[in-house]
Image 1 (cartoon, rainbow, N blue to C red):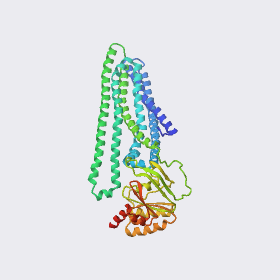
Image 2: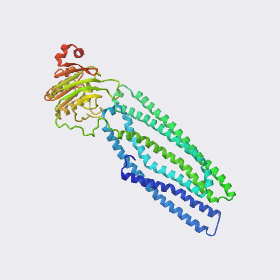
Image 3: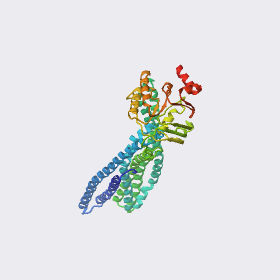
Image 4: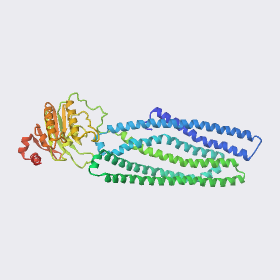
Length: 508
């Protein structure tokens, strides 16, 4: 109910009140049933008129219960539907609000499971199942009240088995929640594997990995199945104990009731009333626990979903930030240190300093995993540096296609470069911009990029050194620091890291 509106809370309150009325109706009808039994056993001249009156009361209760039960379910389910819709929107909005570091840790299957099954469980738990749980609990409580009011001695004997049920069910609630969390995690992993496979189906086919992926998927499903079986065994054991207690209740109550009738301490109708009230109370107590299982599952799902909704990312798009009216085109790194959130022990950049003047073309080269692409990602503010400053701020970006199924790698690069040039940006970031192009296309695109560099600040990250020869300055990054700096000719004469990379590329 955390994100419910006033109207939805009103509907929920009305639904709960209706549930209480429906739950109280059956025990109240037992009072009339008890009177009918007494009229039959102890006949008088007014029996017929009394029975007709009692039957009319039964009919009134039945008709009233019909309308009350309708509004009970209508109000609760409408409230649940409206809340579920809002929770889905808030969760999806919260996911899109998160920073890139959060997505690095995200299991896609978990997010999809929360958005679909998780919200469905919340809707079920706060809707129909909530009403039934309250309804069954009210039958139990009303039965106790009526039983003790009519004959407290017999009701006290009947209640002797209830403490065992309460202890068993209380323990079950704690254990069931633990199993529910583990089961959801297992299914989320399985969904993640399925999503990963389907999004990379061409790669799976190319390497004939269908059987391997089936084994991975079945492994996670097997874990979820084992947890589900254990949870079901535990739940049904407690439910069986609850049902068994009902039959013990019947036997004990009838035995003691006969003793009281023989002693003249109770009428037969009173005994029937107490037995019926306690039997229905005990059985509905077990049914309320079944509904409570759904409510408990909704609580577990809500905790996970609300955690995402309430999370405020370090890089929050909702904050006003600083509006840059006109980009100067200058980029500055001051004593920047950085490590990825999933690899805190690996330093990617260490006291990294770099100044890129407006209109300058800078190429960043170096061995694999040296931190080249990290520089681009920090400029785009995918991440915040652990220490130091990167400035200024930059506008948002968009992706080309989804999942790689719509366009080839070369087509994507053509479109991405065209987008960048059409927007006439002040700062142009090129990370392996021509890696997926053939030699002919690369030459044409490279010529277009050289013309587009005029008057712009350009940062290039590339493994193909042929694409960076004409850069104003080439930075050689290794181990998170700048080891060499200069133009192509100067770096070749230094005979250092860059010269080795050039010789290696020429041999290839």
